[in-house]
Length: 203
Image 1 (spheres, rainbow, N blue to C red):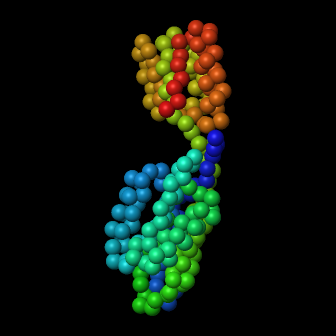
Image 2: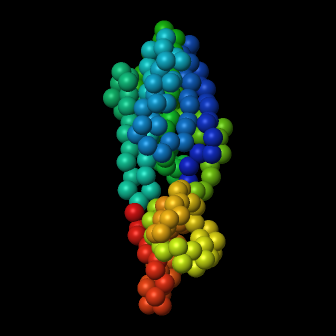
Image 3: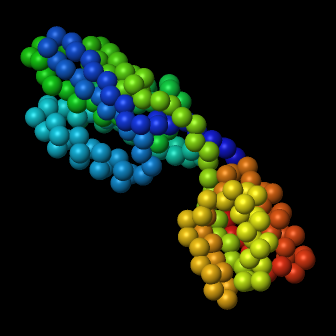
């Protein structure tokens, strides 16, 4: 089980110029396809007069998804070099968009590959790469009488609470660091054996 992953802390920006063409790169931390689509809409609207909006993204931890888009540039001359920079940096949950303003002189496939690769690399360098702990969502249901025992578990395992309800049967929706899942399961199995009414479900 993967315990952590690397991604960008903040938006990064990079610039590359070659023979009149200008390449503006933007690197974002993203979590979902919807995040990616919103960023693409934002950049395309902001730089609507640019000829190309090429991009690549990488999502996931256990199961990695990725995509590269050349947006009209010669095949594999833009999206793949951008994706290559994401992969070589070891980061995921990342989107890089490179906007190109054409300067009137063709760069050739080799020149384009270098331009998109360099601009994407500069965008990554301008941000900070951070390590994020993988967290797993859990649901905990328990009787009101078991509140003190469950609260100790929440404190000991530093469970991140998303939502919580206090009724005759209480419920908690939260996130737990992946290395803590097995000992947490063991703790709830012990509750069952000792008659404490509390149940854990991995979502």
